[in-house]
Amino acid sequence: MRRVAALIVGVGCALASACSASDGAAAPGVEASLHRSRLFETQRKLALNVHPDGDRDVRVGAIQLDSPLFETVPPESRDALVRTSDQTVVMPLPFGAARCDQEADGPAELVTDVDGEEVRIPLDESPSDMLADVHAAECDVAAIRADVDLRMSGRWERTAPRTVEGELELVQRRPGVTAAVDQVEGNVIFTVGTGTGSGSGESAPEPVLEVSDDQTSDRVVAVAEASRCDPHALTEYKRTFTFSAWVTVADEAPLRIDVEAEGEARRALQDLLSDCLG
Image (cartoon, rainbow, N blue to C red; front, side, top):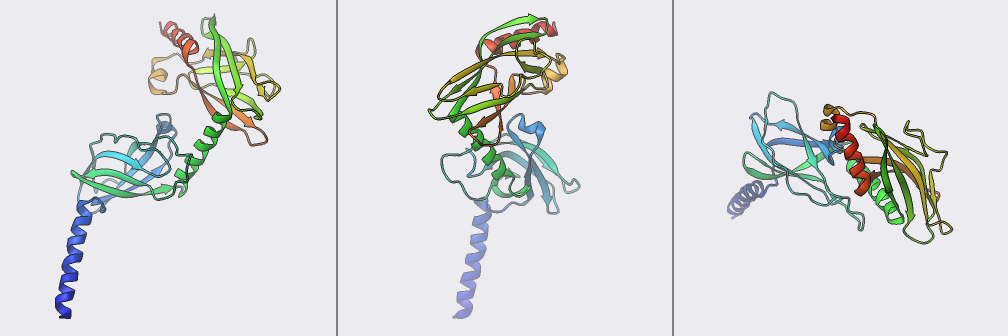
């Protein structure tokens, strides 16, 4: 009787293993890990390393990050051959907006297909708390954006062949918030400064902008100068119209947030680049 029971258990385990593999719990021939990449992060992507784990080549199809820390974005189509003779295949893996309104806990997985079979692969992170660090940083920035609005505003006009000038504005979103912009930074394409004639990128004395209940909005002259205008830079760089500012709220440490040129500011910058390229 025990032999029959053991046989039934063994058959059940074999069937369970087969079902587990068909449901994507197993990852035939592949291991995966994640790390940050400055190049990929300009496209809101992480570096996915896919490693061979077996004695045969496998083909990896669409890839998708499944993490409780981030919103799920659609899979990205891939057709990568992972050879046993190669150590690693590196691919950009998109990730969604940080989930900041609730506690999110649990492991991250790569949802993909290997040789046409859907699988879920546990992801090793380098460093081990990399996703948690990205999540925390993005939620800190989201908290600042809930307190204040920082934007390129006003009328933006050409003041020199490679220079446009307008305004940078900080607005209090909630009563009781005290905040300051300590520094403004450009990017690979544009040098940005504050204060009339500051196209060299030198910022006004700190703080550049301040808001409180006594002054709920503040403005400063902002100058953007095209420091690079070559087709190679414009093709390779993906954040042409995104700038950075260091913002302090209350007594917290300064955090860097993105400032996207929109509306009239973006049109002025686009026209400048078009003329610059000829």
